[in-house]
Image: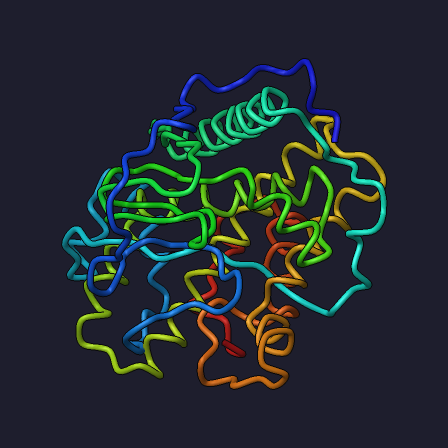
Length: 313
């Protein structure tokens, strides 16, 4: 990626080295949206959300609260995720992203800044102002409005405070454990969490989190997959615009698709337990993750990201 020398976001809080101690625990039914990095624990099931995203976008663009129609109230959030087809491990190859600590910070500041610019433009097309999220860098563990979290949770978005959280050591794990290296793969992770922020703004996450209270486990998993794939599609939209701006180099798109491939539910289950349990999927398969990121990447349109209306999901 041609990211160096570009404008950076001022909305990055570096708390590394400043975490408080104490026991680690999650609040019941954690509302964070986080990346699955070795299996994730969820509760609930799913109710049909139908054409919620299209209706919500129209109402939102007209200055109406989509939750008035959808019966929402404020809710929590979920976690990030990606997709599969197992690739040969790349951990023995020279890393393309061996940044110093300062370079890593500059990288995420630059990527976050580009998401702010892209989504501000998209929101302006709807006559709206984009509220920037805050990004928190941390080591080991951190407390958010969604509770305590550790590095083992992976990057996550908390709708309770509209903030994204990431321990940058995750990027090394992404490359060495999952064989998904490269700067655009890393940028994809951040853009996916920003995708959850978009969902929170337009009412998708609040509605989902209200509905999850009455869902069974199977239903919750099915709807959770749709939420995660939509965040992937929104990440692809960001990729569409930075590609038009000349950020991407040959091979960058493949880096993101490999990352999506390696963090699909089926790929993770095959790697960790040797078999897959489709009814337990809550982030989407490798194929689904690749498809929806590419869909956003190719279209650049929010209306193309209606995973709730897709027949095969």
